[in-house]
Length: 386
Image 1: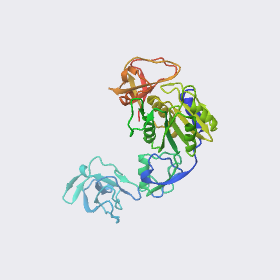
Image 2: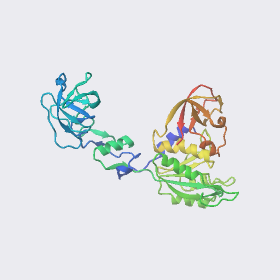
Image 3: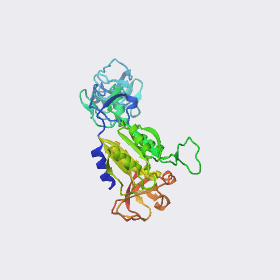
Image 4: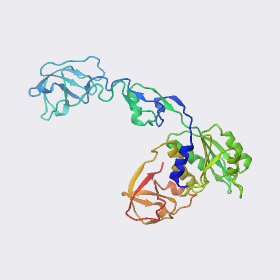
């Protein structure tokens, strides 16, 4: 199955709980709004100055203005000006009654208690009107929007310190294999440190998704079944390594006995072909390849976009060299950008178990299934690695 087809199949099967929770604004970044957010306060809430200068009436600019007072941000009193009078005003301070323009300090000529207007002054300069950004009752943010840094700032400007957001899916992470041990243990020559689980949880964290690491599953059918029974309350379970021994595919047997249906058994992508996914009652189980690079790619191309749309940073570049690939599948090519040119790491040659190859790369290029060669100087679009 092609990756885009697999992703659409996953979206059709996955049915996360439609629940929400109230979070403090400080923890809301990256979360999804559960409801529309209405403006509860005009923004700005009074007419004010956009910069430091002199508040004047524009039509009187041909004669010097007399400076009669100063206005500061935070002053509650609103001043007023008469004919050819002005107020020295600071950014954010209330505009005086009678004023319609602010002259920038550095553009003015001050002589004693009088100030002359600059020649290029325009009516309304630096005047910020009450409600020009947002008016009470307007929809500021819509349900389903992902809160970014700007929306968090807008919520704070409205005095909103707690916000109703959709609960994230509960995700469990396993690794599998008799040869796997944890990084805090001492490995023998025959043992491999558990890199995949930590790479998977790190990728999830890169999009703001929490997860629970539940440990290593041994290559025994009973152990595989018990592990997934223990994770029955999770919306998504991600396991790297197929938990198979010889010809006995314990993972597939366990999924069948536990009532899970197979969504796909492999992907047309290199690396990452032996990736599987299962579904039961709207819950998903991913069985990722045991090779670290392949597990990383499957996480990037399936799990991350399932959880968060537009989760990738895309950059355009020019391919620096001819690259030959096998058609009929997506080929992942890792590399870096130098002087706007994409240079494939090690000429695009790698093994699916390599971590160092990813470590030395900043971007990934995904070929289309019909490509057998990427020509030098061709324009390509890259995904920045998380």
